[in-house]
Length: 195
Image (cartoon, rainbow, N blue to C red):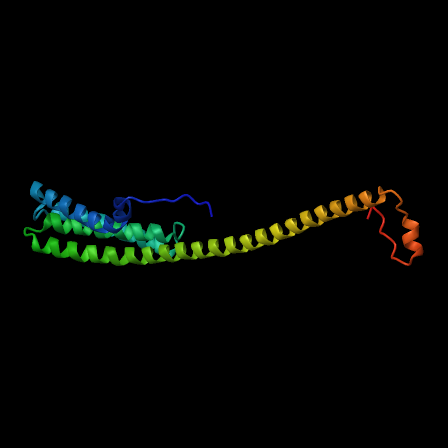
């Protein structure tokens, strides 16, 4: 009901959607910088990247298998690191630009495919939470309306009781009023004032 209105800047909304492309582009650029600084056709540099990528992939496999906590996020991070290291190694080792660009396109497509799955899950969770919150608010609003009607009814009954008691008191104060004469005439007995 009284939630603050939050308007996100378009950059804040677009940043998560651009993150996979920015990440793979950064790896490609760093690999090409490494290539320009002597990594081209360097077996030692290629071997380093193979070892690092294989180590990251092994860590991802262990994380996915349940060792080390069995954390899916950890496994995904390790596999992404392995892919990034492999892309950087190819970009650094290759002498032309077509192969690194092809790998960049493939890595970007895979990154968006994986990210889209998490975005869908996050969106589903957000929609489910909003629905649950709406249902809860409707339930509470119904309870509030019922309680408001109940309290208004109690207030009106109390007002009418006060008005009735005031009328009885005013009638009893009239000159010549005799409640026993009403009873002898067969009229019903008046209720006690304390009821």
